[in-house]
Image (cartoon, rainbow, N blue to C red; front, top):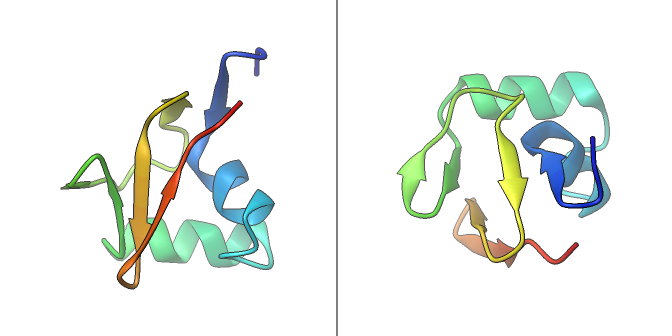
Length: 64
């Protein structure tokens, strides 16, 4: 990970959306997570500043 990107599963843990990496993986694989409005099932998806992550109706903007 560089200073410019963060993996989707790491972002979910950082924001407290998922308490563990395993929980983040399950949320992503089940299609519960959207990135910029589109379902994202790759937990290794690299997020950049300005990306919007939506889970359970809550949106979070990536700020690195």
